[in-house]
View 1 (tube, rainbow, N blue to C red):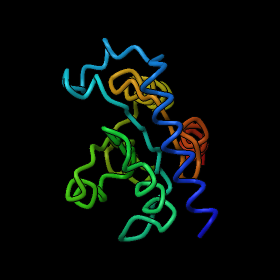
View 2 (cartoon, one colour):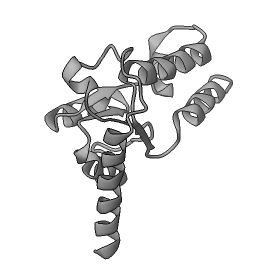
View 3 (tube, helix red, strand yellow):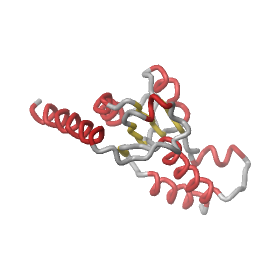
Length: 148
């Protein structure tokens, strides 16, 4: 209970600091409205979600980020309905199984690297949090799955 209270207090302090020392330039954040550009943006990488519902860890972290003005979750497409019902924004990266179904033999490594960069650029997050593998590791593992 005390630890949870301290974590919430730390998050509130961090949010105040972000507002006071705005370091993120959001002029290129094309997916944010002018109103949202004035607020704080959290980007959550939740690429390792496998069950029917978001993992407990992902749900807990999303609750902790409720103080942000905009929360964007990058996850597999099957969670869009859940995230939308919570009022969150979402993005996706393909999962390795989708690669086989797509029939596309493109340079997946280059595509994924550009997609991750585009997500970061378009949302201009003030804070990033990862549940599971970070996007760079996800891309590396995706590339390795192509070789098998």
